[in-house]
Length: 344
Image (cartoon, rainbow, N blue to C red; front, side, top):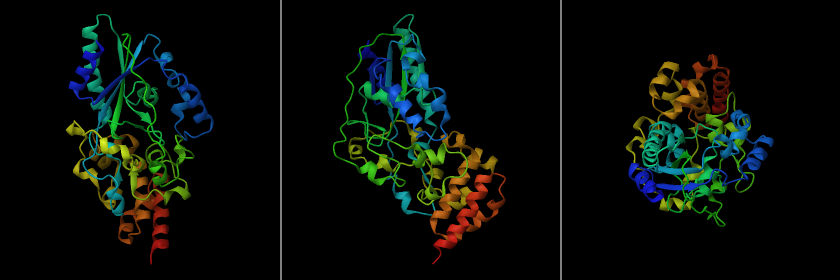
């Protein structure tokens, strides 16, 4: 059954499949509690609110007997760090340059789940993609897909860094795979490149300093000491993923929907700063970017303009000093002041 399951899931588009027990990582709860107790989760209150489920997959659904973890690649065809050398352009995380992965992965998971139900009468399943209280990365390591690197993201010897994770909880008993171990060795490339020093130690992340967190999860103004370090990254950050040496084994993306849209590969900052709510929603329809809303997005764009050192972009910022959103207005005033400081 398991061999047939892996074969079907691979045919459905997944690059790798592994299985673990719901209780395969008993240390999850303590690790999560320590992370939250230290305040390293920042404003992500949902981590604390559903910690009892997130820390124990068996508690989330007691009937589950197996967790099927699946990897779906979205490996970029371009150098994701090249845009950082174009300060008048916006750097958007690779995963958000195409179609929203939540929709794509979930449909594929449901297809695999339906197949399993057809094969095993009475079988039940639940599918999860990122939005449920499931610790996908530790479970994926327990299922043998890869390991959590020093940057805390999952990577694999035969996958590289660029892949999404999906989970199928099921009442079907399946033979578990051997857990993967770390193969990072003495490499610290991911730690060294972080613009904001968000890693207090290997395998530890302070989300409050992570640019992905700051641009996506953090509400309101970003701390002054971090704004200048964000560069032109307006949605997410790929630095620690992009420099990983294991990417030489990265699997090519299989779904064309993950390919970068032309208007999201390196869009002009001035153009994005002028978006009102309606224009924002229209431009990012079907994109994961849409979920942060116009105000947070434009706030990020204005920080990037302030970091650009390009005085010609300030014209796009000036009208925003009176923006109804206080964080956007604050960012505009900061960008204008910083532009003056950076002028020769």
